[in-house]
Length: 117
Image 1 (cartoon, rainbow, N blue to C red):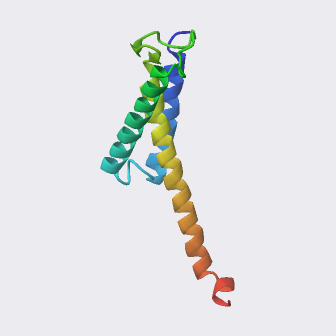
Image 2 (image 1 turned 90 degrees about the vertical axis):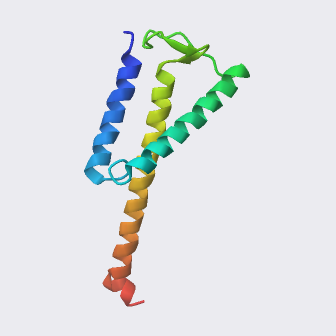
Image 3 (image 1 turned 90 degrees about the horizontal axis):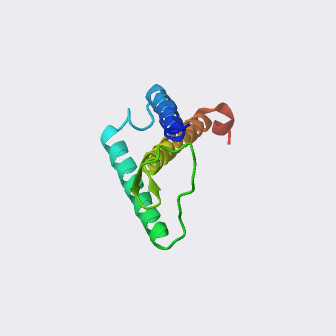
């Protein structure tokens, strides 16, 4: 089923985007910084992939789930989408963890048991 891998990446990205919108973690909190971080992360990993491909470490396997379009030898069309998704997911996960830890810290500072110490 050609294109299934790309469809799953895009569906997963949509899910993360909806979580981000609901909790305003990244793109809805700071769209410019989010776009820059995802762009820089994607570019970094594409350079990493290029180095791995040139060294013969990374090779594209055959899969009926890929669209079948290569951007370069051993670099399928799906790779930049996956790398952008990976960068965005990491950013949203970091922002969510940061917010949770801040909230716990604030709750601990205002709790009666903390004030008694």
